[in-house]
Amino acid sequence: MRTPDFVRLLRPGQWVKNILLFFPPFLAGTLFRDGVLASGLLPFMSLSLASSCVYVCNDYLDREQDRLHPRKCHRPVAAGKIGFRGVSAIIAVLLILVLTLSLQQPVAERWFLAAYLVLSLLYAVKLRNEPLVDIFCIALLFLLRLEYGGTVFGITISSWLFLTVLFLALFLSAGKRLNEHIELASGAVAQRVSLRGYPEGFLAGTMNMTGAAVLVTYSMYCIPRPVLIYSVPLCCFGLFRLLLRTQSGKGGDPTESLFKDGWLFAVGLLWVLMVGWVIYR
Image (cartoon, rainbow, N blue to C red; front, side, top):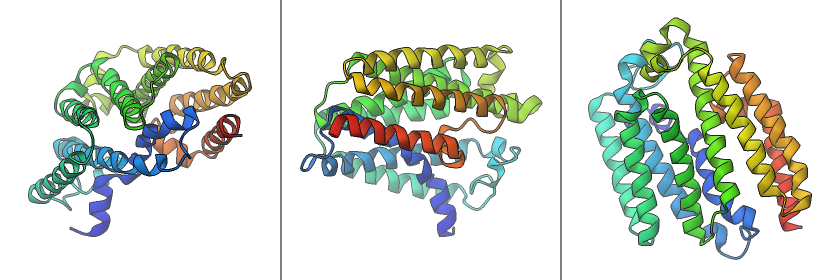
């Protein structure tokens, strides 16, 4: 097993999703107070290692289907570069690390971490094969990240922020499934069992509906801070850009799209700068 294969198996690029952990203090205006950012590093690493553990399990369970996929066939397990013994050793080490890190956190934080790990494993083993259940599971994992961050930093998550993240997660999940359907065409069902239960146009309609809901709930979240309302057009552009990429078959993975699409990256960076300026000026 080579080091590059080991790193690819852990998918550290997907850890960017766990930055959601820092959204509560960022939006509350407390992120850069003494010790706040540092206090989130341990939970962030715990969550990231837990997610990597699930990715390794998922890659092993999906190895046969991945070998038939035009891109996933190059993953270390599907390509035969890492076998059962290697996968078992990596999972064992990751679980030990997650347990060790979690024991250094308060009990409330451990519960969120445990819930994330259990739901992720249930999703990888069974729930991802059920239509609707699969995209709601992904949305729940995003909400667990958000609430975990609120618990870590002692911040109550507002109702509008909760709803915004919920609808955004459903939007992204439906987009990922729609992209798989477009990319793999007739072979999509063999790769993703849940796609069998989605009628034509359902996923595109779900993206349209949840995208609209994101704009409404995020606008309501911004209203108490009038200047923040000017970030809504950026949010709107970002959603439309993702919608365009997905329905054009250019990619439905939000993490990959963020770093591969210059417009999305620029809008995301501008949103962070604008919101940061409004909150921290």
